[in-house]
Image (cartoon, rainbow, N blue to C red):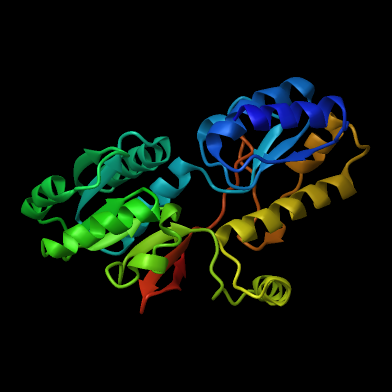
Length: 291
């Protein structure tokens, strides 16, 4: 983290940059966001999801949706799909997992979904005890907001126990197909991008990306591309290249069609956009629908 802080300070004091793109993860982004606010230099993160990154900092923006946003959307989606009971497995030592789980619980309760919750930590590798509890509860679905390596272990052990519930997850599931595609078959998770999206700008991006890098882009590539588009649009419309003018222009960048959806910033400079739901099918990630 300190390395990122030092790099940011150098950009401001020595390089005299007008706007900064970064950082990637929430903890580091939060650390430099206060510095950006103090220096009055616009900062935009493509992928940091914690609410605290932008909250109360009018020079700080983000391209990705927040943890609570996707948690709420996934609960609404589960309700729309007829889910009446769901078990939540939360990584209590991970802010990402806790943030999504809390928002999911709040919305699910509003929607009348019966909820149970079991917790684990980053150190856990054997999940059979909590999964045995979940099996006894016989939920219609299981929601696991965590990253795909841990999720792969959980659902593999759940399969061994004969659990057949429908799985839902957050965008940390992206990558589950690499080693756990078979056991994750039928799982549905929130994302912000699908290579199968037929939108003209998405397919143009796909074609150009594959021509240059010889592989399909992942969600983070799409968010990175969108972030540069937002900055470019702001720089073109800003009255001048001072921090306050660029911030004002960035606030006004609304309604443009990005790779991850049509952009609209809320009051805290977080994007409001449709959530792309992905289904693991045949060991691959397929576009289920936008919601």
